[in-house]
Length: 561
Image 1 (cartoon, rainbow, N blue to C red):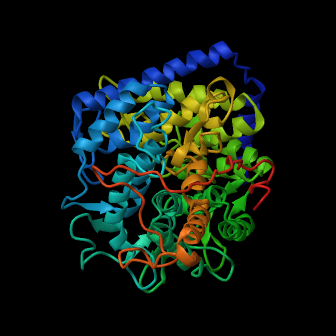
Image 2 (cartoon, helix red, strand yellow; image 1 turned 180 degrees about the vertical axis):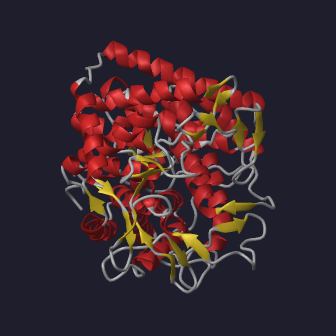
């Protein structure tokens, strides 16, 4: 195992020594190339594949893959805004409201529908103000895209109705969970809901979504082994581990990601404590020479000495917690694999230094570019820009077709596959663009970010869009300030309102609760129904500006947590 590691590190040293510095003009030129890449893929989807879920770039037609939602359009919506195209964002947002219907007899992946559809709609809703769309009174606590996200998420709730709280992997959007549905699902399929569902609960006031996501996380937490690891697939009813390989890659990856990002987004120490405990075991049992292997979850013995492309998110996640030294070294290993093949194969044998049989493909995944974006933000090292340029040129040279970009079936001979997954537009291009745009508003600073915060909430009392955006695992940015605006102070405002209105009643008594009122402590949804208009409350109190920030050298929480 040692020899290939030595070789890859040598490759990195050589490439690092020749990494050049990018000027502002060069970075701007790269951004233009990335925009051209996006519009070639996006226009090809509209011309050849809409309203299907995905484009087939070799045959120039479309196919439904994850549920017949026009998925690529939903997934790409916030990327339009990231690239500065307000006009198309507005057009597509309106188009989706008119054409997408979730009351359909379709079996849908609970995991994929959540991260792509619910996450995409929530992100687009929170960015609507910046896109200069007409906003409902009370936005971001109401709005048509929010109602669409809520509608989609409600279709997923039957999957969570299990004795353990762990969700089934598939649900029929019209009929619920099939009696014959398998009870086995992957770890990520249980633990990748807290970002979207908590955001939905905080914006609408309906606690159901956040509650089921937390219940699933806690149930999964209780199944970890004596050495602190979780496996890859679990039976959600018996809570027995079906696949006992422990690692940070496929089937597990976004579970760990959501513990960290959920901790930051929600200022939640329970989630951070969970990840810290896991990370201790991960570092202890799976890490070898800054690679992360797969091990048996109960014994810690190596079961698969491979690197999976989905693991490439890990250095970026480490950077959020301030673990930069480890993140940089692991990124070095992963980048060496990219340079070897012009992309990351799905599986890479570390001892052999080569691809694994039948796992040689590269479906245009974003994870290494994602980590490069985070590490460039953390270090300013232009080596990460060089990776971005390498990725851009590889994708253009190897995967471009007359009507889009095609997944690579085999990186050894660059044979292509007839598929362009929606995450290419949602994640790969977005992270690539943000890597070369350090002044972007999503980074919270620079020309676009300075002074570009927005007002929101009742009476414009909330400060939104000031920074600290958290990306879900499909690269849909969520604004923590919106959750703070609609959620954190809502109970305080309601309590003060009730007290003051009660004092205005004869004898200082408040009005009795009506039968249609929600019980004390239970929130009702404040998302407006079609045709309704939000009325101004009798009393509202100002909300302090949101001041949370991403982790800097381990600092995750705000001062008042």
